[in-house]
Image 1 (cartoon, one colour):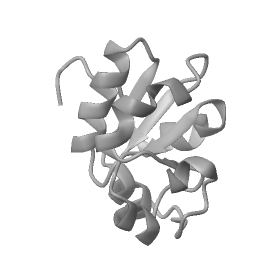
Image 2: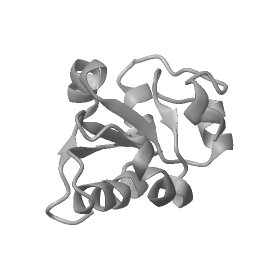
Image 3: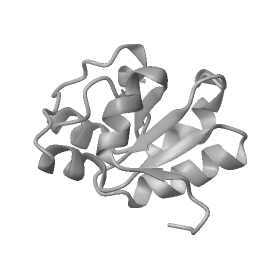
Image 4: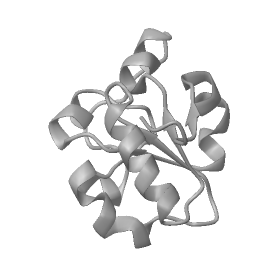
Amino acid sequence: MSRTTPEIDVQQLADAADRGTVIDVREPAEYVAGHVPGALLVPMGQLSSQLGDLDRERPVYVVCASGNRSAAMTDLLVAAGYDAYSVAGGTSAWAQSGRQLATGLDAGPAASA
């Protein structure tokens, strides 16, 4: 992660998720196995082509498995003018904090893109 990548922890995500858009940049099989509830699936390789689908008026919280992919994708979003934050520790930290994971493709149309 670059030293300029904006980052939040899972508690900050839990507190702010309803005020922004949570995207999960992992691959579909990873997402289906367990993700932050309400997170939209936008695999890392597809994010640049789906930037126009994200609301520029809301913060974007980027989640992956551990924080590496989300940091890279947060840098991409910030460079494109989004108010974006990488979630430190990713889905692993979310689960380790005792929070529930959702399974399946349950996050709406973006989840099946």
